[in-house]
Length: 243
Image 1 (cartoon, helix red, strand yellow):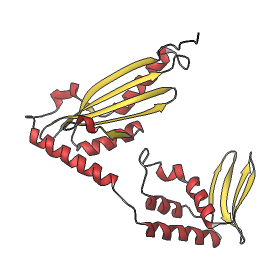
Image 2 (tube, rainbow, N blue to C red):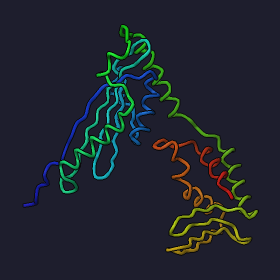
Image 3 (cartoon, rainbow, N blue to C red):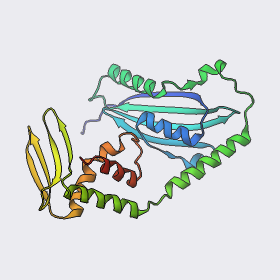
Image 4 (cartoon, rainbow, N blue to C red):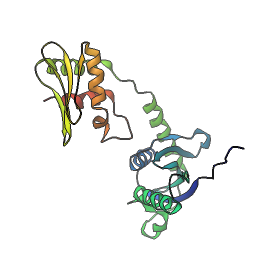
């Protein structure tokens, strides 16, 4: 008979908080705080809610963000975190410590509903709630249908190739070595030096552009993570790294 795995450790955290900004903006803020993307839960409409998931090893997190109530200056949001981890990967006390610390960091600075005595709310405003939901849905639709103009991206790529051919380069360095991307007058090349050494040659422009894009993938989106910046912004960032 096959062995049956023990149920994973599990924890649930649920709270509500006030925020002066719109539901769409709060959704973006929560994604940045947690470094996890959430998606619109259309099944919850006409109430506005988002769900998402992600992991910070060894813990898996399932998130829920809901727009609960609108007041004149503040909105109330619900935030749910359900965490789990395999028992063979962590002890229960370590699991609870890690998840409590993560949720505490995500909520840091947000005014929970336990702080209601410090917030002048006034009456609930159902019409304002509906208007904010409508605005959020419109912004979600607009975001989903953005199409980038390929021409500025192509111009930036050409500028990068011209810069490399003119003797400029991309490079990184650290205590164990580094990497340089350059053109030697005959071909595009990548050279890694230090503890690990390697050399690559890229005969085609497209091959070099793909490598450059990969080379700067994390750095180009570090400030927007987990959101992906527009591709034109990525190539603007890359062009600025030419040395």
